[in-house]
Image (cartoon, rainbow, N blue to C red; front, side, top):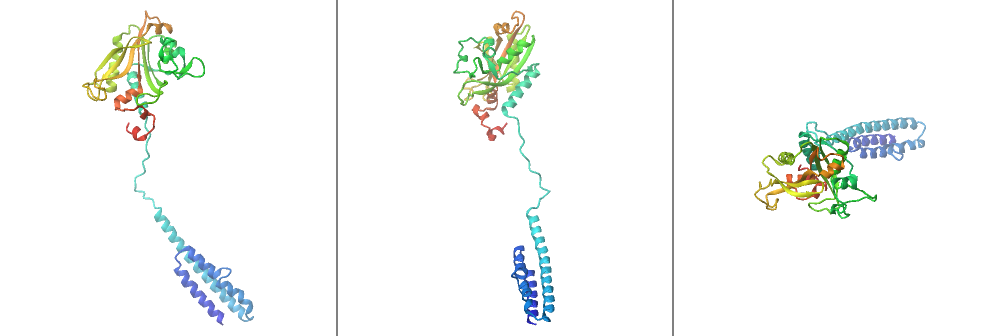
Length: 342
């Protein structure tokens, strides 16, 4: 019968084309062409109604055999193609377990934090304790208790950041912490007060409206100016190096008398004079002095029984001098190229 010959041709054609199919998409296209609704096998099955009763069983059996054969070939080829796809995918996504792991960057303390910790460690080694206080202060603690008169320029709106509430401001230094501690503590008192301070400054290479200070206070019997000088010399040499010279220059602060500014010999030129120290060979690092008797009296101490000294330093300035940083704004711009150097 011609139809049986046609089925043999379909069987051979299906086997040959399925064998050389190179992708799952191509294989699916072959399945549709042979077994789909309009496929070659389906067309023959639909034509069985035109055959005689004697031919139908023979052709029907042969058609089912060819269909099952093609289905089997399709399944075998599909498994091989899927295996090749999986192998290719595994090759592309292979993980070399012999490679070292990726190192993620480890965060570090900010340079300002490092300097504060270094200053704190030095004074803790000298027997001082760390004290803290509020950043939002009253005029009493920020000025009045520190012997700063009402007409002092530092109290003007040009210099101090006041809140909308009368007599409340952002502290301009951490000295109020000293007053708060003395109010609650009987002598002897040996403390440092690190923290943020605020002033009405326009940001430039040497000024910032927010900065960090470390203030120190020592109150005890028989505290002398020599104790102040010796303490600051120890600090300066530990912070900037044992080969640094230290000098004290007369100055004025409302809450200390006598008052001084403290310089160290320039670490860039060794005191000979250079661009960093403006040719004078010295760099200012902090202000200090003996606690004014009026301040001691304000907190209930007897100036005839105890005396003391106080000092204050800008952390950013210490960092700039120690590491040669020429712009205070670099500390706050969060440029990792700068911060990672420290």
